[in-house]
Length: 285
Ligand code: HMG
Ligand code: MG
Image (cartoon, rainbow, N blue to C red; front, side, top):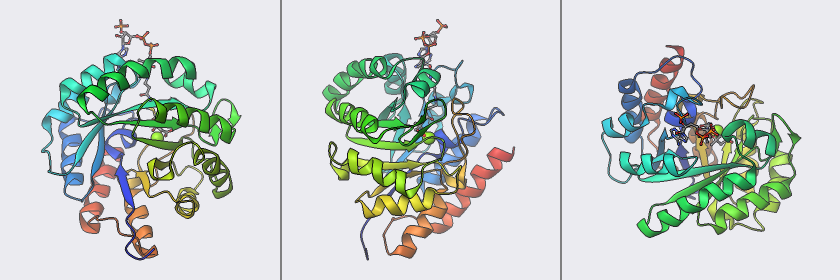
């Protein structure tokens, strides 16, 4: 793979911090994003316009977007579950948004209080408006191999939701191993189905490292053609509605691994290390 480019989509300021019980001051989040902005990412997810009753940690998202120093060439992304969140993200100046669905009904209900079908219907007006504004919308699919409520998830169920999100205009589909239970085998089985309905160049791997397999799962995904992976500086993270979910795979670990394999990430290892220790300090309070 000498010289092949692999992009890491930094999700630490959102997925990394959303699960922290302690209220992290906006200024600290801004410092983390500003540090990450110097590391060479093209995309950083740093906000979620969700209900503050459901995820209190993300309540300051507009202030975070307002406080950061925007670097040229970086798109600052926000998670939105519905039109209300989408409008708030637009008002706050997000450069792109992400809608999030699940491949399993149990997690869909627990995380966004909707069936899969209801959630996809909620996303339609978002995609419709975004198309007119040229606002990029990313689509997440959670529980791509395992669900904390429903158990094993069929690859066909993932392909179905990925196909729907792509058809409604999501420019990229990020496949979430929400609870970090996936293995290279289950990831490969899932990807082989999803690749049939969404071009592999439009897929991203979003792997949590609860089971310690995230790096192997990235390797399995690389062999099947994926070239975008989500990760969080310092390996922070988890989802409040996925019991037992631990951190996202750590950005600095993935970057070092990819470089060792001969891929180019465009990331500055020293700045990354600084961001990782900042993130860990936020977690440890
Ligand atoms: P609901 O209670 O069914 O919503 O929640 P509702 O429409 O009935 O509204 C109830 C109240 O919430 C109302 O306020 C609304 O205005 C308000 P009230 O009248 O009671 O004062 N509300 C909002 N407030 C702010 N922003 C909004 C918004 N929408 C409604 N956007 C809802 C449904 C979707 C809102 C809720 O379930 C929710 O916010 N869920 C988000 C959960 C979440 O953020 N989870 C973590 C992110 S997903 C994840 O981590 C997985 C991922 O990383 C990939 C992976 O790892 O698999 C992406
Ligand atoms: Mg996640």
